[in-house]
Amino acid sequence: MPSVVGEREGKRVSTYVASVNCSRRRMLAVSMNPPDDGGMHILRHILTAGDRRYWSWAATKPHARGSVRRSLAWELDMDKSNLKKSLNKLIDDEVLMLLHNQAGREVVAFTDVGRMIFAEMKWRWYLREAAPEFLQPMADNYGWQEIAIQVDRYIAVEELDASRKADVVLAAKNQLKDGVENGGTVQFPERWAGV
View 1: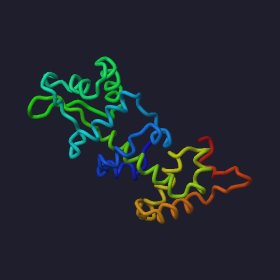
View 2: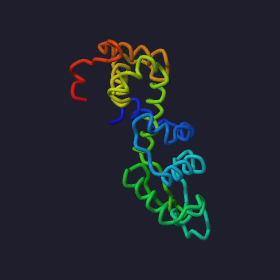
View 3: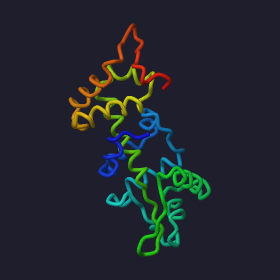
């Protein structure tokens, strides 16, 4: 479940920011299940070698006959069956989609969901860095998703700037002030019971 910040930033996040966050370690750190090695290869290639305006990559090799799968297999030096399996998984997860451009070539592009995933990663990683000593114990128990959503709510209600570290720290401390540290354990309000 994405936060409001992730949904809003999904329309504005850049491919540069996405490529910085496109690593298995960063995806795992924000509780996201990363794609397999082939999928990670495909995502990185689209973000770095593709059309940055449209978050897409077109089949470019002449011998590929306009097929993005053949062209990607050649570009990434991957076995076609492995590439097809990895690409289909990303398409099934609605991270990528296949289209055709005006020249009749296939294009692989990020969906709105794919963009939102990278915006959410950027937000959670920023939140993680903003107040680690305060938020890490809570995140260990409840996960960064719940922390991100709680902080996001406060930012939205108080109309704070999610890109300013001071506002993020203020929102975290005010929204999560009910979480009290007692001997290393964090107790949350009743609304978080059963999470």
